[in-house]
Amino acid sequence: MSRRILLTGAAGFLGSHLAHRLLADGNEVLGVDNFVTGSRENAAWLQSEPGFSFREHDVSQPLFVEGPIQAVLHFASAASPVDYLELPIQTLKVGSLGTHNMLGVARVKGARFLLASTSEVYGDPDVHPQVEEYWGNVNPVGPRGVYDEAKRFAEALSMAYHRVHEIPVRIARIFNTYGPRMRPGDGRVVSNFLVQALRGDPLTVYGDGEQTRSFCYVDDLVDGLLRLLDSDHAGPVNLGNPVEYTVLQLAEAVLELVGATSEIQHRPLPEDDPKVRQPDITKARKLLGWEPKIGLEEGLERTIPYFRELVERQGARARPLA
Ligand code: NAD
Ligand code: UDP
Image (tube, rainbow, N blue to C red):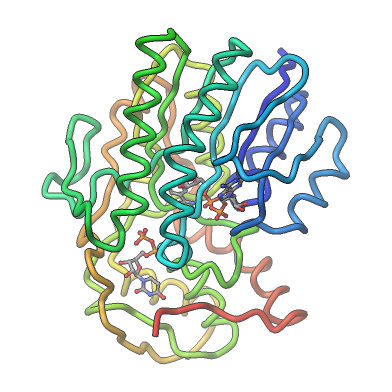
């Protein structure tokens, strides 16, 4: 069924992949972005595809859209810790005011609403792996609180609209996802390590590198998101790859696949950096018939050519914390 879909954050990493897939499935996509962490190249590339239109707009401000909209996918928000630590107030605003504005659009249009929430709602978790029923361990006044609490508020507001206005809301709790079209300087661990290895620079491992993350390839995630959108379940539903790695194991995998001999350089662990993170995806398996298919090695192999091009042609650099 062809739909007209409003997608915020369309010029970002996940937004550009989602838009591409939605267009390929025959939908029309109205992308909205203010480029605070997104790229004009992504928007320009999408504009060459039939069915895509674009509005440059800060969704923390009200948005008025002409014509029908069947689904609102709210993906606008800085997502890399380096980005949201630099943009604390914008991050709180897009998660709160931006979510309110986009729920308002969904309400007037009678559209369903998909929220890009995050594993960060679990904070530094003391339940492992993380199940959706776990309420989390977030420091509201720490530096990461700007992102975590914005997303927790966004979930609460979405559920309030669901209960009060009966909007079909879907909440995806997305775990670390990587792939082509990440900004090389977005500061996240996969982009930093790949760019550093391709340049022959040291890989910056924060702390002892024993903290864990579970990395999902972007195509798997997009598939899960679209299944959730079209399901009957409000969620929240964890979407991520349940295979857990230490940061040091990730560094070793990157070095091997790139064929680099960069050294490992330890740097201080950022404040409130979660010690472990791994999704329990029982719900996604049961409710959506979904699980990731692409392992870390294959996902990195698919991602390396994109970063290699940026490093070799444009001299791209990583953005590690000092
Ligand atoms: P990204 O930084 O690449 O993309 C975010 C996009 O949102 C950018 O294009 C940015 O310019 C746009 N944006 C930010 N504030 C805006 C505003 N006020 N108005 C309009 N546009 C705005 O990040 P991403 O990895 O693509 O993340 C997309 C969404 O998915 C975010 O909501 C993020 O919290 C969520 N998420 C991502 C991951 C992941 O691993 N990639 C994990 C959990 C949650
Ligand atoms: N990290 C690291 N080196 C880097 C970037 C990140 O060791 O250059 C670590 C970071 O401390 C965290 C993990 O990698 O433990 C994942 O960080 P990322 O910024 O990708 O996202 P997070 O999962 O913390 O939101």
